[in-house]
Amino acid sequence: MAKTAIVLGATGLTGNILLNMLLEDERYGHVTVFGRNSCNIKHPKLEEYIIDLFELTHYGNKFKADEVYCCVGTTKAKTSNKETYIKIDFGIPVAAARLCKENGIETYVVISALGAKKKSKIFYNRTKGKMEAVVLEQQIPNTYILQPSLISGKREEFRLGESVFNAIMSLFKPMFRFGALKRYQPIAPETIAKCMIWLTNNNYVSGRIESEKIQELGE
Image (cartoon, rainbow, N blue to C red; front, side, top):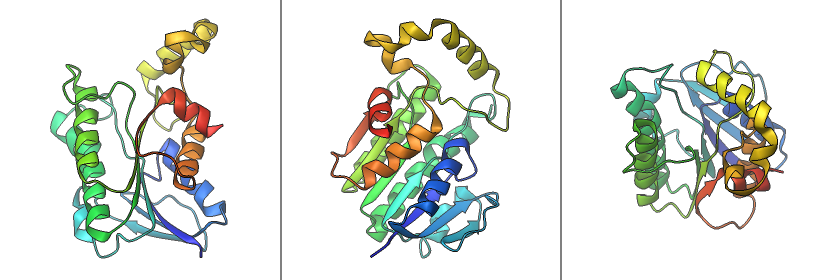
């Protein structure tokens, strides 16, 4: 029997690639998207709900699937207000995890970030770390928290910090292929999406998965 999936963040770089992969995957018969904006895709498998993701818990009766993929995230440059930042990077993934728990969904995959720690002195890492902790507290049987390094690829919005980092990486790329620095090598969104789908279709241990392992599984 074909599986069903929910995608959050389907208009983002990784989320959009993931959505297209799921729609073309014969193992999936129905994909539901919850988002603020339309992903502008027409497909017989696709069902789309245009909603305020801050109110995701109001849609619990429609939040039903075999698997949930959360690709929601923002940046300091895009969301300078810390309260709004927390509502996005902490609130939405946690709300989705709690809905999975309430509705008996046994597989949840969420994108976090390399270096996420709930006691980190860095606000971004601390927010992601706290999110991870609460997600794991839900004890969803198959929980996969991906911690990618900087995600490469073209985005609709310009991100100066990422552009500078990518330029530096191009110059020193050989240094990041081996040893301790390997985990910081930028990772392609296609690789992350492939890894997410691989995880949900293989018997892999639940928990946090760092960038180097994401690269390996996504290949």
